[in-house]
Length: 433
Image (cartoon, rainbow, N blue to C red; front, top):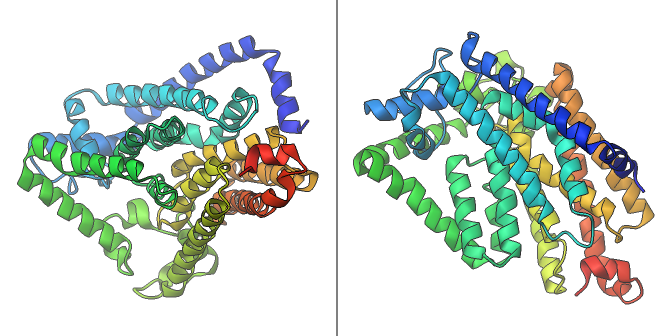
């Protein structure tokens, strides 16, 4: 039995005491979030950005021009600001506390939904709980920031549970809603369903996009005003992804690749191999930009190749592994992926732990997966502690190594499924035809 599971079995003997300690910790951490986010100044929470946008909706002004006391701007589609409109006149502490409670509830819901996944004949609770333990630094950072990453993760897991239960349209509709609320990191999951030819899922996502980008906002603020919001948002995103990103009002708040909290291929490569900050002029980052985009496209191509090969051999297993790998590509490809965006690393950890708990890995593959898992977990923790490691891209390189190992294991199992499943029932249980 692997060390991770020996640890789990040891801790499970004291589960009542640990549950009590967890409840105390959640309350204490919530108090800290409340003090930092709504009582002590400056307010250290992104909830101020969302509430300021909601106030702009209420006042009939431009939500993308509204600024907080720290001169931060709202960057999401209009839906979130509109949904938060009732909070426009409530005390900030109430919104911060409500956001924290909602995140904590959705995190618990994520673990429960993960337990319901069909990942093979394994003890479902163990990988679901351990994946949370390993990704806890990211989760706590997200909750402290008042961000929506846990909401995105919750909908990603629920979407796959519904997909496995053949409720494809509802799965797509919820995924579409999650994407409209916060595009990164779940947008690329649409690529998984496209390659899977899950047309009802994509139809549900398309309907959700129509409703939550156009119909609901138009009903709330009027058609013309919503179109103005959308035009402003698209222009801001176009500028943010161009070589003139420094001219964007979001540069200092979000786009600066030299800020160590930015953990995408582009930003890390800029810090390590790109021009110095004082030498960055339009076009100076062209090679880094192309290299980062090329690497992201390569990952998508590798994923697509594995999926198409699996489908050609009529293999029905390994879908969740592919789903988890797709969820990470958006983080690598986006010009902005801050540490609190990395909540979907939970899916990557869940996949690795499920493979280790199952019977289908050879000894060499087991050692590689467990080593890569510990490297990824360590990179997240050390990146949170040491700014120098975060500057070097601890989040990116640690999780990318695990991503690569899981993809290689997945591909090797696909390639050997036909040859080995007849003689090895353990292999056939996971990658049979």
